[in-house]
Length: 161
View 1 (tube, rainbow, N blue to C red):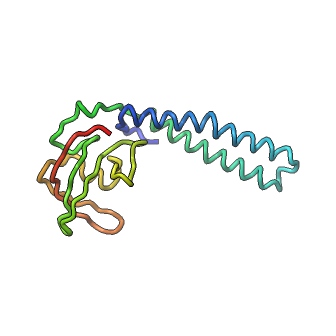
View 2: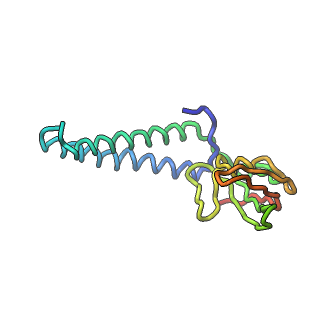
View 3: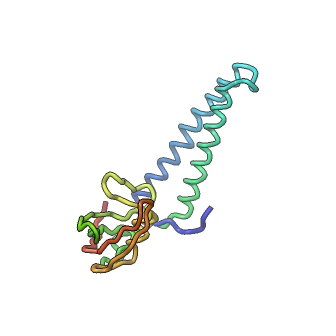
C-alpha cells in the first residue's frame, strides 16, 4: 500500500465512505449467506457454488481493504483555498490540442468523484498528472497508450462540482 496522500473533497470522501459501508454491511453479508448455503449442500471439495462464493468473498475483501487504505490516506481539500492561476486539484481546465486545434475541458478531481463521461478526471490519471502545476499559456506533452498528446492551457477556473 502507498503512503501517498489522496486529495478529495468532502463530497468525494462521503461517497467512498458510503461505498465502504455498503460493501461491508450489505455485500459481505450476502456473500457470507451464499457460502453458508453452499456449505449445507455437502461435500465442499466438489462444490462449485461454495468455491465461487469464497472467491467472491476474497475479491470483495480486497476491494474493501483498498478502499480503507484510500480513505486512511485521504486529505480533505477545500477547493476555495487553492490557487486559481495554477492547474491544481479541483480546477476546471480548458485546453487546446496543439496538433488538431480541438479544445477540451477537464475538471481535475479525486477518487470517488471521477466521471469520465462528463470529463471529470482523476488528478492521478495520465492527463491529470500532465496538466497539474501548469499555468495559462503553458504547453505540456502527455504520453498516453496511443501516443503523445500536446496541449496548450487556455483557461483555468476553480468551480465546485
